Image (cartoon, rainbow, N blue to C red):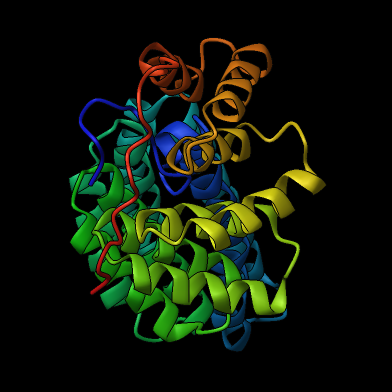
Length: 296
């Protein structure tokens, strides 16, 4: 996928592009799931309401337990896992299952988390499509971190099938597609996102990365320039533009971009990738020709 001498990393690679982006996206999804689970529980409790309103109080208690379990899973994953297991034994159902999966994710047991999330999505036959889609999307992210990009693409694709116009789900599937080497498919999803959100910076950078991998350097450069025009200090944007500039033979431009990353985000993974590139950036070396990639 990459020249072995270089650490030219794709903007679609979250581990380099943004150190905590995958975790941030995961927790944003958790927040959405929290609201959806609570709303679903409240709706289920509605027919059972009595004059004493005991059912709503139970629903509120379950919602509070879910919220507490998620917070604990993030702060102390081992304790969060134990709480989720105890809650499952008391009949915590899907919210408890989800909290257990989140705890596994935070324990970096990504394969187990992904399997748990996929099983949960299959069990949620009566849940809203948006809720199942978020669970499957989280499974895709967990598979990606587990190193199984093909299963990540499958899970992300199932999420998109439930919510075909959700730009965040499309973006996640594009990441999984690129990780699996399906660059044309990544570009197609990103085209869809950018039709509705033409100024979306992360989608522009991701599409630039995918087009670079396909050897389409001119459209790749156009996308990343558009992104950097909006966010001039974008570290992933600078990393990607440096990659493209180097492949186009603009070694000085690449150097400037990679050196700037060191000033903006010293010690980050993007900085480490940029430093590795700079070590190989010698004036006498010829820039390699970009080889078109075949999407699948």
